[in-house]
Image (spheres, rainbow, N blue to C red):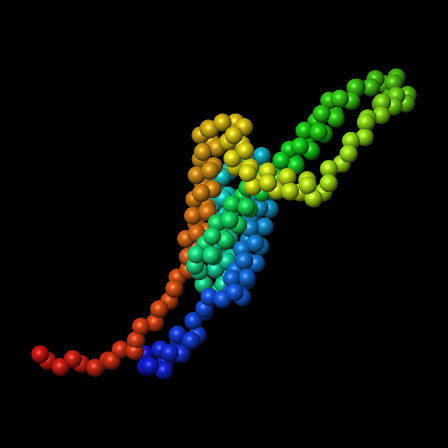
Length: 205
């Protein structure tokens, strides 16, 4: 029960959707997405295990961060943003993973290409390899665009190259569930104040 003045004051103090609230939620969500990307990539690189359940944690982190930034305000644009950030974080995590694997493969190829040297040959100077043709380096802007597009498409690139499999389909399903987490969290919980009500005994019929 509340008096009319208290009810009106409570309505005025409720957080309202605004451009500033959305920007705060966006910044918080981007921060959570970056942290989720780093955690996902670090876990895969450190353990060598690709566990799709990390997508659930990323979706939860992004949704909670956006709600925190908006002071509890949610809505359709918050939900769409949270879903996109969750997908971007999970899909772009494949880029540092691929780079790490490429470096490991190049190092392995380099070690295998080096011929073993005997004790008598160790003191000699190895012959210089023939000069390789200089290849033009790709422009940084074009490389960044290509790697970004490839990262966004990574969940479906693996499916396209290796074909449908149980692991790939489960990974996509878990990613969808993680995006669903972000969608549900950022829906918001609108608070409505009803009243005031008269706290008086009803007359006997």
